[in-house]
Image 1 (cartoon, one colour):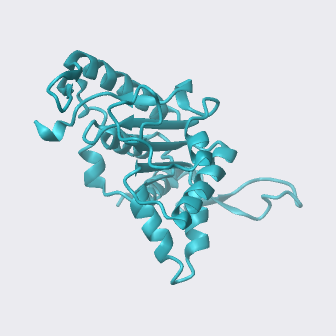
Image 2 (image 1 turned 180 degrees about the horizontal axis):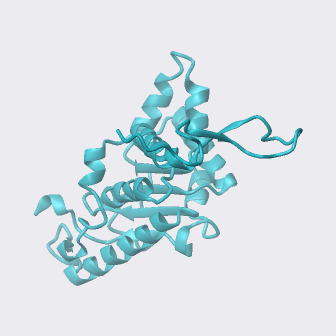
Image 3 (image 1 turned 45 degrees about the horizontal axis):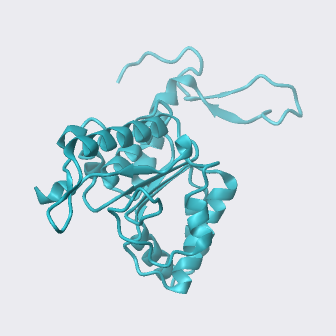
Length: 257
């Protein structure tokens, strides 16, 4: 360890601002510039720990590793080509650009629609990774919707529900994966609406992936499963959607080939 001391704080790591008595900062300690890098690293580490996803998963799902050139066509049950390889590649290329734009400056909602294995979750994880790598790391939390609802339901037992729901409602960027794979009870549907409605009202950056056919162009997806009309309205609000539209990943599953 170097014996050279900071010329600003003399090695104390903290400073006090020269402000008049009565000022809100009078007598308060602040981190010195020499400690800012260390504190930022600790902050970034805490954000990773609270993000709800392993660092390994994020490292395996970067934008750089998402290759639209590997897009697979969509083949119907009768063998007909519903979406060609060229169309699938164009769709994934567009989705990647939209996700990268959102990650660079999280604003509004990014709602990605596609069948299983199309790459929705990969792009969602890539957004999480971009939040980590931002020059000023952005607080982000990832969860699959079924996992989130199970956790909220279990939190009633230890009285942690209110704190957990508030954290989900207020986090700077929330990534909700796999909406539509869960069986929504009236309780779960109401909690999901409470969460989405709060973030919709506050216009907080939110990423949602789903295989529900929220758009007439998503014929390759499963039909909506009786989704609450209030939730549907929030998910399709063009005034809030990044790019003013839903993002369709019209490609076959990369897991099948």
